[in-house]
Length: 135
Image 1 (cartoon, one colour):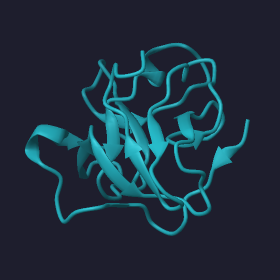
Image 2 (cartoon, rainbow, N blue to C red):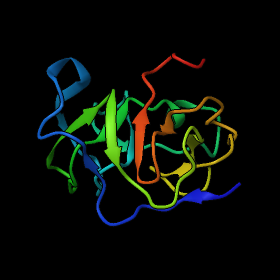
Image 3 (tube, rainbow, N blue to C red):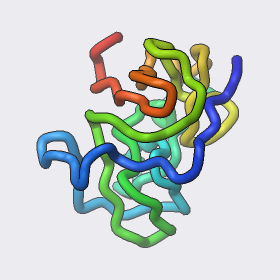
């Protein structure tokens, strides 16, 4: 399995995502980078980096961080749309939640990241796969 490296700071491909594709009004539980895959912890309602290291709640991706946030900051998750993310990606390659890099993507399934959560639409952009589309 190879990790997908971010090329610069990931950014959503339009000025703002439509409201129907976001979860707003959330608070970050830790430092989160733009484009990181995140989950919402039931115990505190805060946003944390998702990880596919185990098949548990931490692998339940709620969305991708719209912009960088630090612990205690407001954060918005994007659930659908395109992100400028990597470089030299293969069109139509599917990406899964990483089992080794919290919030990251990998080119193969992990223990908790069994279904694709993004697909490359060109060499630099990914399309976020809405929850359940490939499950």
